[in-house]
Image (cartoon, rainbow, N blue to C red; front, side):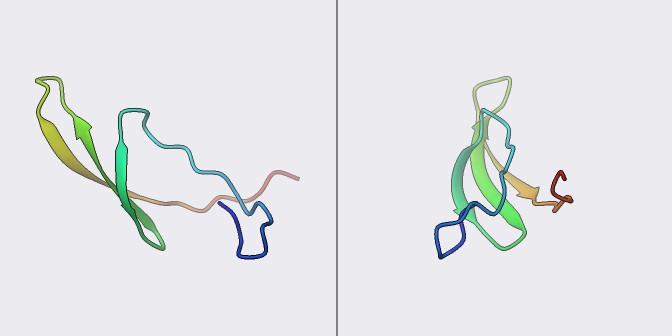
Length: 53
């Protein structure tokens, strides 16, 4: 994640099969294929964690 001034503010780890369509303040919405090759809409909540020191 990048701040408006260009500084890196954090990173996001997401499932590799997720095609992101929208990003909100605390969520990511996307489409992924299930085991039967059917597209499924998936909503993932973003959880903030403390930065390593």
